[in-house]
Amino acid sequence: MTKHDTWVKLKPGNPYEPIMQLFPDGMIPMRDPFPMERPTGPNKEQIALWIVDLERLSSIQVQAIARLIASANNADVAEVAADAEARNGFAMNEVWVESMQCWAEGFARSKELADFLETAPPPGTPEGRKAWADFADDQYERWIYGDEEPPAINSIEDIDPRLRTPELEQAFQHLQFEKQLANYSVFDVLTGRAMVDILNKTDPDNTYSLVGFDDEDFEDDEIYE
Image 1 (spheres, rainbow, N blue to C red):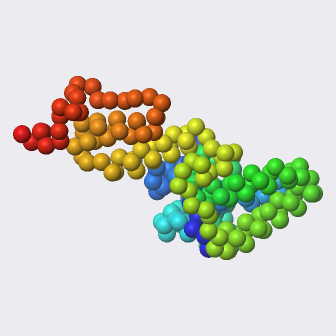
Image 2 (image 1 turned 180 degrees about the vertical axis):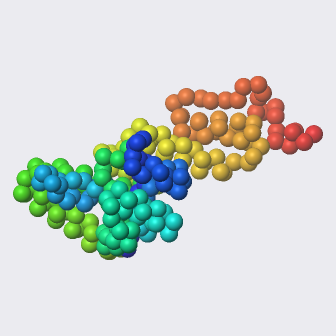
Image 3 (image 1 turned 30 degrees about the vertical axis):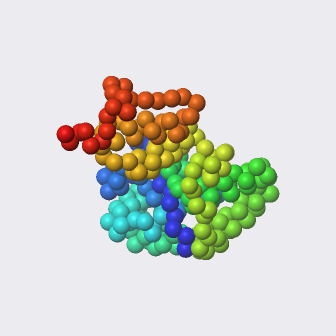
């Protein structure tokens, strides 16, 4: 089974608020990077459901979610837990999800979803439902029951352009900055030399320098004299 890496934050007023203190930063682990389960509702409409990832829940979190769902649906806690086991997780309506975070697996599968949607028949039609079922079966075979490995992500260029956002690009810039900063001494960081050096490397069209002293007249060992 592939190690899943998707997390979601829920909207204010969601029915899980009574137990959200059990989830650090309010993030809930999900099996898929999109609501893959599409059961038919009472009016024959398709309902999009996320699946909370059981593999990344603690026993306390599992019990809390099972009790919450059982109470809301006047059901037995054991039955709710058994249903979750069969689904590989608890079902959650997509209407409660506000935002999502993921990494290599999530981005790889999101790219596959984007590819699928570009050529898929209209949703709600028999052809569309059949196409989605085939797509979901393939996801199950490779990513849920299988051990598919996603491509490594080393830079923003490794992420499909359709999935990039300004927030994601900013996060990558921050990550790259932290990696470069690790190569400098504490002294260079404190004096600002590290920042200036990194800026000159990442933005060669401009020239950055420290204000207040000349590098040629100030050596590292002078701080101790």
